[in-house]
Image 1 (spheres, helix red, strand yellow):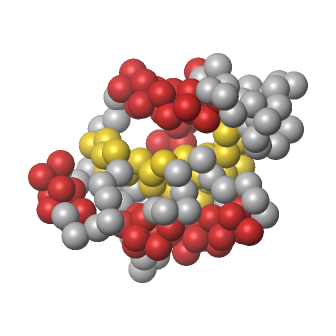
Image 2 (cartoon, helix red, strand yellow):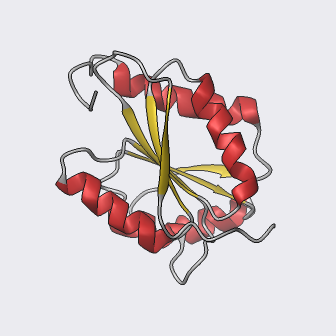
Length: 159
């Protein structure tokens, strides 16, 4: 896996800006910068407006999750690698904030059997995507999750 650059200052961008009343807030926690264009492509294909925050460390993701939760704008979706820069892992993030965030997706090179063993004692088992990732598979999963955000939910979110 290529070594990532420092993303200690979380970054964000907005995809599909529209006059719709709702924006899906997404957090991507990934230390492999080569995957950022992949995820950007997924979000750009979505018919829904998406605001994406990026970071490469679980510690920075925790700060963002707490901030959004306090501000009444929690992330609707968190996509996280299991192994990240820094001492904490994506699983640590899930164990601390899985209930505050409506949807979690793990994306990792970890074999699926190891993932199931790892998560056996956790308070749930988020969607797991094994790397290398498939554009069509990931888009289908993300789009299904985002669609739930917008079905009957047009007065929530930010403009």
